[in-house]
Amino acid sequence: MKSILVLTVATALLCLGGVAEAAYITPIDALSKAPPPIPVTIMGSVTSASPGTLSGVGVKQYNIIDLGTVPGCAYSFAWAINDYGQIVGDSTRLPGPYGDPPGWMHACLWQNGTATAADLGVLGGGISRVYAINNSGQIVGFSTIDDDNIFVRACLWQSGAITDLGGFDGSNYNIAYDINDQSQIVGVSSKGYGPDGPAWGSACLWQNGTVTDLDMPGGCGGLPHCSNGLAAYAINNSGQIVGVWGAGGLGPSACLWQNNGTGYTITDLIPTDFGSYAYDINDNGQIVVWYDPVVCLWQNGTLTIVDGTHSYFPYQHINNNGQIVGSYGHACLLQNGTFTDLGVLPGYSGSAALGINNQGQIVGYSWMTDGSGKTRACLWDPIIGNFPVVATTGKSVLHPIMTAACNGYSFLLCGKATVVDSTSLDIDDGSGVVVRVIAPGYSGISSGDSITATGTLSPSSSPPTLTCDAGKVQKLK
Image 1 (cartoon, rainbow, N blue to C red):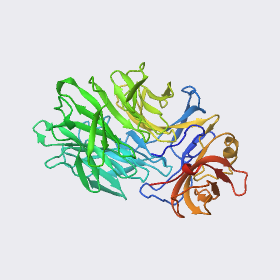
Image 2: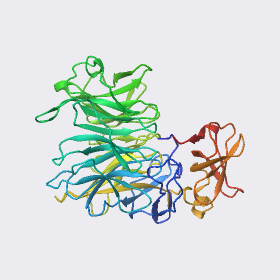
Image 3: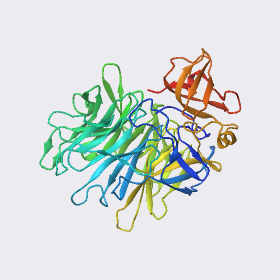
Image 4: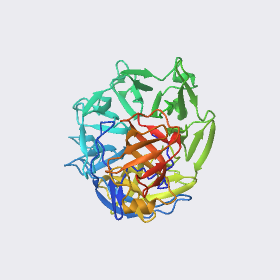
């Protein structure tokens, strides 16, 4: 994830597009770092929700978009969204993820503005699920490999193919939970398989074709009383990893792994107690921790309670702007001490937010409580004032909505760079209008690179210009 100040149209990252009364996703080839521009199209059905006003930011509403399913399916989940608006999840023909035979649940991808999901397939058996997608379109999760859907393997989907990542020797139960923009993957791998399922597992890191055990000599990194293993849930772009270690009958405890140059050290985030989970970490080192029954933020050794009211708040995820999402029966957002109920799809009873990108786009699902078990993947798309967030990728900066929204806000453009001189470069975002980026002192950018640039947009200039600090021009990994 890239660090950007969202919500001042804010970031109207503008790698996502829209016009009044509709919501759009700027399409991008899932598995290419520098895809060709594709025209913006409507994605799914749109419902406008009014969950309340966030303190200190311009977002007042969200469009709730039904993402649909893989053709032939009735149920779906959306687990993650990258900064290009590509969404990954799973879709099933059954009321639940497993159910009776044929037990069919497949990982899927939403992109290119379509209202149906693309089936990503399986290694074997009938079940696959994906949990994360990076900004290069690499996707990770798991797939079963047998007809009985017992043995589970961690997988990477890229370039239209699915790859078994492997695990520890003798392991047939491995799950990949997250991938960063350096293609480092984290998850869990069992250390054997018993008659009742996988034996205790250990957190692991997949990198450059090898799997590294994040457990340390002595078990659980030397942490006390550990007998139930570890799991790594998230990794940021600095390679910091968070997850949980088991403490025998005492319960789980949130932990952090950091590479000291010779290997990984492990830190217990709440050493005086048990019953905590570290679910996610952003590029600023902020860790979202569920410390039963409250939601906390851990940073630089300090643990701060950010919500002690809505105790049922699982699946917390945090973006680089410090926005945290989860569920307390409805999908919800925490930002700057403000709690926002994100609402549900029309006709549904509950919802959960499972992922958020740096543009503030949120994905998850809505569900029925009528006994049907029906779930539907959905996207919460932030609206600025009376307009949905608008994008310059695939939409001209000269668009009247762009012009109306420009005053006093910061914009992020994505596209191909052409170096002009040491103070400026051009960025082609695929909209047909090239923008001149004025950023004296920028460095590390060559013509043809895919970049982002965040600054003040002047659409009436000739050519349109974006003025920003040198550090706000970044090359996409």
